[in-house]
Length: 208
Image (cartoon, rainbow, N blue to C red; front, side, top):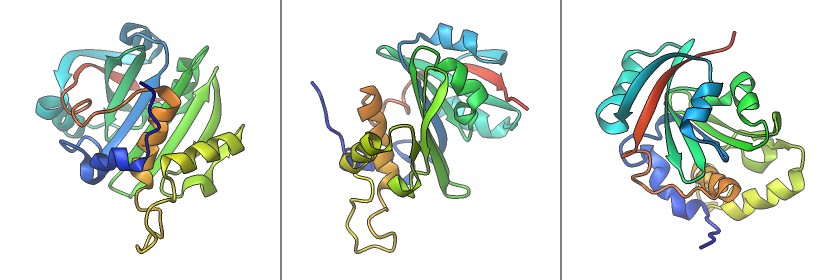
């Protein structure tokens, strides 16, 4: 069944999500790709087996954090591969996302609670085709086709929250970014999707 999600469908992601998975994260969705195929295209320096978020990945990512060698957990969601990083940002880098997007679409949503900023990227056929800071919404959009994407962002709920707030309608833009991700990918995230997933974990060498 087709959906037209809005920020209201993803309010559960605010305040960290179900188990803290969205406090500081990078979620990259790779179209028409299997986990093993994505791993083969990543600059992997260590394969660390399978694990979950609640008991292991969220702790290991902080305890062993190295900005040059980031942990990434991958799992399958229908025809898409999800690459999830706790306090990481590998999916935001063009040297990694660009090659992954050859012949397909890659959508990346990143947020850091430490500095309260985020980013959103769309790569297609090896090229960055759109990017913006979710909190700033359409005003920050840079895109090959800004009109179409701006409409999709408005329909997802960017800048559409009640204005009786200090952020003047932007306070749910982070949730709207999840709704936009679903509209772009068809991947519907449930409260347990990340929190209860089993990940294939690798350590990725960041480009210099």
